[in-house]
Length: 357
Image 1 (tube, helix red, strand yellow):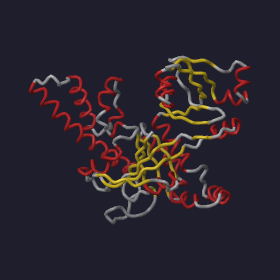
Image 2: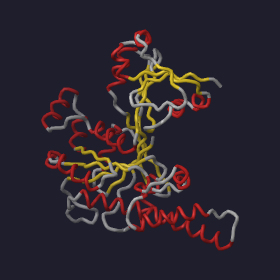
Image 3: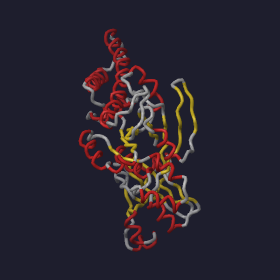
Image 4: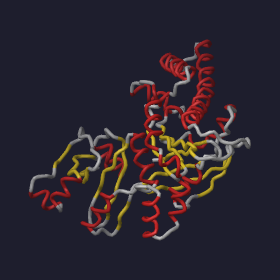
């Protein structure tokens, strides 16, 4: 799972990225500019509990691969959108960082704290970038139609016209209702405004204390976006303390859980993701898949061979397993189930895939 970090310049986007990756990232340079890539492990208390029971040789958390791209200009210079956003076109979702602290913008003027306006600005950039891609493709499609070219696809043409109408009305493509076939038809264009979007308020202490009311207002205004709030600078400083001091400082500052937990929760909601587990003496491991995935699709996240040769999934939910205390006791109580290809995996399922190639 790959997530792109976007935001205005000086929004603290890179500070949050460094916090989440614990400063372990690589610098990449392309024709589109410089950006950073690092992995963010997903903390999960259920994995900790399962490891305590199985004592495996290895415990593996699932993770996000995150890309931190150049900050966008604060002015309406949308002609540069493609350059700044090129690196995140292949990501599965986007996290928009919204500045909630005093400072200056990239023009040297005092920054006006207005998360709603900043989010609208970022959405405008995504929409404009998509329009550039769409217009270029429409021109080719309409030329094929005029020439009577055999490659002309009427359904593609009509779909692109619908997408253009959506974008020109200043609405992101993710709010469009598309059939599975239509979704597949536009997937190759990597439209940015079609990607799930999570917005994170990067607050100072004053605004972090007000986050609940601010988030409630934003969630009403932007109902298709998942939100979270962090004090990235403070948490980055806290991260450098030892564990006991860290807990005390977080308590004093009213930070109930680390930023990574907030971001992961918001990201899971925004991208519609769930976690399932595999367990054993060799390894206890968490895996991520989209909500609604069937057992074979989840098996494919482990290895393509498991999906191709899928027979059955032996499964038990985490809560039921913890009630039983062990796999043998769960089987004794009849709590283990054998599920077929139509089974929809739930968040917290423990799976053992039976397959044959």
